[in-house]
Image (cartoon, rainbow, N blue to C red; front, top):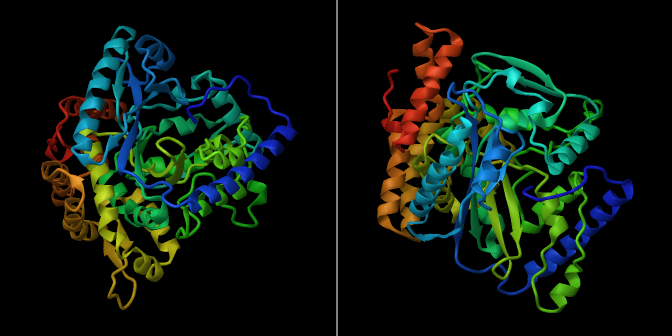
Length: 494
């Protein structure tokens, strides 16, 4: 969705033409996937990190366009709301120390952007949901004035036919309505891209789907919204509900929302693209002049712009990505992890999710045959709600029956297997030891970003008002975050 468009109004026939071109692109993708050697090549990673911008009082500062204009970096983009920015990190070959390189690039980018933000009374914070965010900070007024966001909002609202309804339970409960998509902008994420072999895409994708709940729980960093303590990863519920374009009048059959975990274990890469094209109407029908079949006939790789654009307006928590670069390849975009707490913590989450997926990869067809897909979806929402305290249903090759297991028990068993699987790759032993040591630290201390935030805030409630407690906690969080100290080493007293 990082595209530049000039209009927010489209005629019905434009949507029809766009949908037809997506189907042509799907046919072209079938031809590409059948080509011997398509998508083979060196494994690589890339990442995107979303930020809040806060002022000196630690409330949101809606100045993203001003900062972006000052920084002038093509890797920095504005987000849906004016208090959010996104930084797109450079792709790294998955060998040596790819996450150390990513971490250093991210820290340098934060320093550079903050130098431009400071004169505007702004500072970046990587955190899933800002604890000091207030309902008065939200509304259509706060949306970034870009045609792509207006077009997105208009299309989703039209499909829904009424305001978005948000209901999230937890230690507390929140009920609210939003007359636009601005609530989606309350969420900030660390999104990881992993290039995988095209001919085994479904196996890699299913492995990521299986292990995502464990990584999400350990990475959880969004325990509150508007002063309410909710899920450990409140973003998951908020994102889904804030852009749920399904009309409440048409819920007699269970059509999946545009934000979803999956519709079953994947059988092929093509199926994932085809499902999003069939299930979800287009939102932004921008057309290219490309004839993808003619491009393939010439022995070249087509861009498949319409298919990629449509895929970018559906938001599965793990998303299949086609890219025409480097001879054409496929990636998995792992979208559920929150931003923060630190650069090194985000990199540890990234290496762990890949290592965990590689650990189960050889057995994935057996594991998916004994674990019905709806259980892994259930695991995902349990992990989002209860974090490291969740119980999940985990398949074992020699199981007699499925049963609930504490998520931390599964994480403890999976960690050495992830380490072993990563040792079979070209990643340096020092990188594996350093980053998986951070994951081990979280497992052994039983601490996540969400648990730390909640623990500190509840301690502060004893002596401070609710607003002051959240602000004081955020101040401590930012002090630790700036030092890039791994979360499990943070003090548990305010």
